[in-house]
Length: 112
Length: 118
Image (cartoon, rainbow over all chains, first blue to last red; front, side):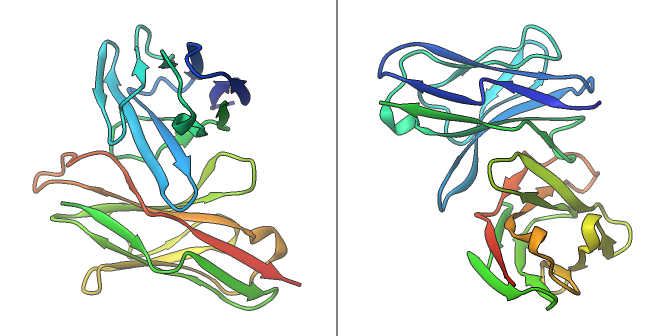
């Protein structure tokens, strides 16, 4: 089954404790991206990757890192999480940057 | 620059009545347009997409949308609402340049929450 898999689905952590949210897709898509969703703000793009070893900032990249060492994986790293990063995070993949995106189930992160 | 505006943050309808979710976009050239649905505690699922073929696009679960270039609109409709349609809906635009290449990433509207009353 074609899918985008994120882990974990729920995470509560403390300020400053490094964490990684994993994302994997099995559709051989070139393009992957991370979004955060906050009430009233819709989805905002954090980072994206057009191919292996090619990543770039989206609209709200501060406080986040990503890597794309393999085509199928695109982890999101928070080196020092802060409470304002409490949000619902989605990973997405697509063939190209402007084609339909397939989304993971989301990761609800709470930073206390 | 491209942008998308969902005109209503919340729409409430009765079961069995029509649904209209409004979306206006701004794009320099021919856009690709999408509607996604997000049910509570779920990821986003593609409802339908417009990519410069037929202007009336049919999607899943009885939804359809009409691309109107003169009005820069891509409103989502359904003739008869069902309780299971209660969800949040996102209009998304992606612009292409004159040669059909990508002008940037997908741009999401802020969402319209649809409530369906029994």
